View 1 (tube, protein in one colour):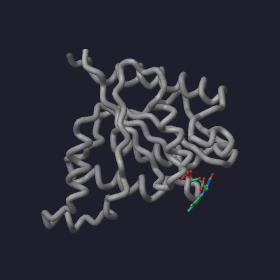
View 2 (cartoon, rainbow, N blue to C red):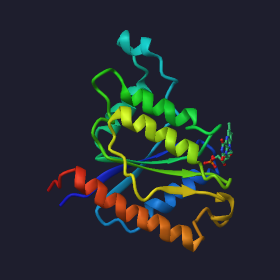
View 3 (cartoon, rainbow, N blue to C red):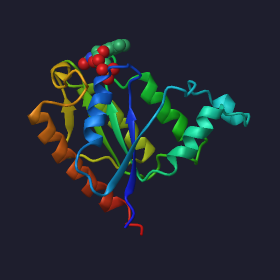
View 4 (cartoon, helix red, strand yellow):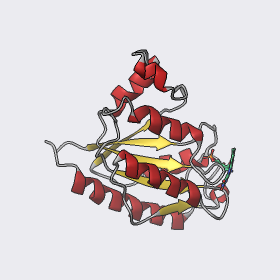
Length: 189
Ligand code: FNR
């Protein structure tokens, strides 16, 4: 049986991003049935519908849209900007959702982890992202939720997750995500 391909989508460009460190920790977890790959969002020009309407989408949009087709599901790891989703990630959702009728998100399962050095753990971003998932028709895992707070004290100087409690929680989260994806995406050979 082929492994299911999961795009890992991180909402930060920052070199030392806690969200990327969290994503890397998730990618190292035991998930025998997943092949996970981080997708870069930094080259995507801000969405402008004219460029699609005129048939002149930027090359980076086309590359992103083609690349995303190969994935069976999405794992979003997002920081919180001003109690919402960073523009980087929202822009990627927008670019991937168009042209109308050709959304790369439609019907594929997803899961969301929010991160923050603060104690509210990116709750606002997590739930704003869920709002977009409804419209994009990404069946998004409801439980367990994953809010990674106090992120500044969870990683060592190499960026590895060292907090055992967070490791346990994220492993349970990933086990559940595997089951969630397997419920929605039929096994391929
Ligand atoms: C933030 N930060 C932040 N944190 C938070 O918990 N809630 C928030 O609403 C915001 N708002 C916000 C806006 C902007 C523009 C910036 C740059 C930052 C702080 C944020 O959590 C912190 O910078 C994280 O380190 C960003 O995530 P990464 O890059 O570490 O993944």
